[in-house]
Image (tube, rainbow, N blue to C red; front, side, top):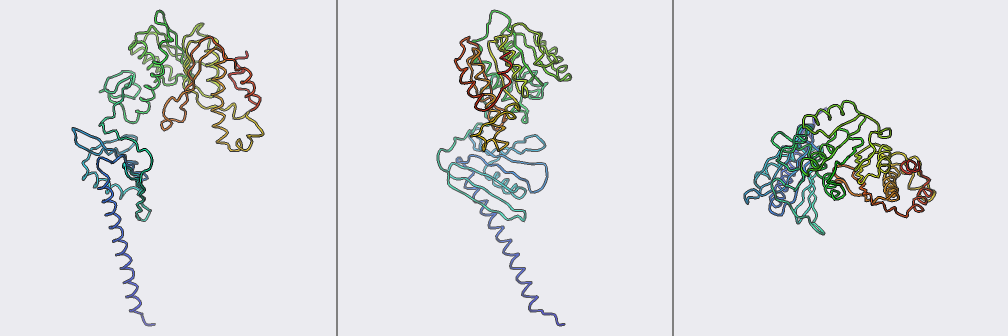
Length: 408
């Protein structure tokens, strides 16, 4: 059998042309990407996020934003590696080269300027696609400050011992990047405390109970803010079921000389250690533990209640309604509705007991889905909502735990 050299040469030529075309196309797309980056990295640049690494490595995500330092426009590149964030500030030309290099290692980039939105996708074989569309509607303003400082109650750069021991702050007063959400959460909680200060007496000792205190970030923050910064005479009792956590918190309280901050091991439902309480705090107490804490607060006629509920299961197993049956057939939807209805009913029960009650956003949804805070201030003026409460209970065939506890 004779070898067909002509066919073989044609095939080789075809492969060579295909390879050459592929290389040329890749070069063209990289050149297009470079041009897009050159056009975008200026005063109108808003942000970019590079994600989905092609291979498992150290860096899992990169965020880029513009900053101004000594009137010079720079681009801050924040690399996320091993639960830590590393920053570098680059001039426009260096930032273009940096982003080009990173897009060899990642599969996706979202980029936004005041004029355009871009999406860059890289396939498994390295094929790049660049999509773009013009901005519509209102475009958010860009914060060009280098450190994006906010007027927090607990300030960055000012050392707070309990934040250092709890791993939120370094010894030099800087916030640990991976704990910044916790730092923001603590300050947000203190803003709620600040709002209710007029309801707390200053001429006597104030008793505060923190049910389900856990690691007690917020318990220590309350004591530090009210006693150290505001000068209130307060006694705070933290209650939790975890022996080792309680022991550690008591050791920290003793270390700081917080004489009137004590932590006890015990169950919320069984607690009988106080006859009069001014404020009850319950943060992420699971399921019905929140209801027992609220019922205790009502029994004491506590002046202030601050409650951030956690997982809630009771109503999810009770709710029935013929009209809403198709909606309840979706488990996830029913679960979320049950949680929202649980908190709304809690607020209504508290109103009936003489509390001015609000349901507020505790922290941005992007930081935690458990972002509802129930704030109640005792006024003694009971709401005339008993018929409305019963109608809700009957319509959904529910018996919320707090309602049952208050009946007793």
